[in-house]
Length: 105
Image 1 (cartoon, helix red, strand yellow):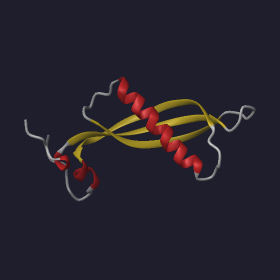
Image 2: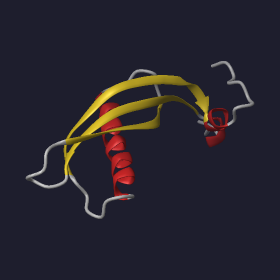
Image 3: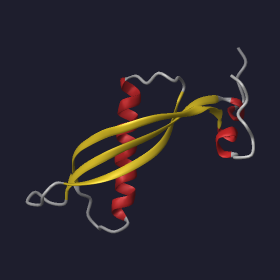
Image 4: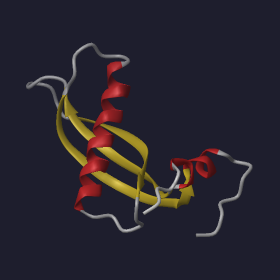
């Protein structure tokens, strides 16, 4: 079996958008923040594992944005996936380079 060079591995790229519901303390009202993220998956079909990865990635993006202006992390009460858009099937190089059209699968 031959290994495909990492630069030639093609993945499906997706844009995920979600709403994070959080509370800054137990007495505070619930607030929301929209977050987005790009992720790759080996197939176009997304299974339960992919949904878990999306939720985790959205929370990580939320914490990165929130921590820039707040010292203490909030309590996340819910993560709602609002939309998942398929961006295409690319190698990493094709996805990053705006001047190179993707090759045919």
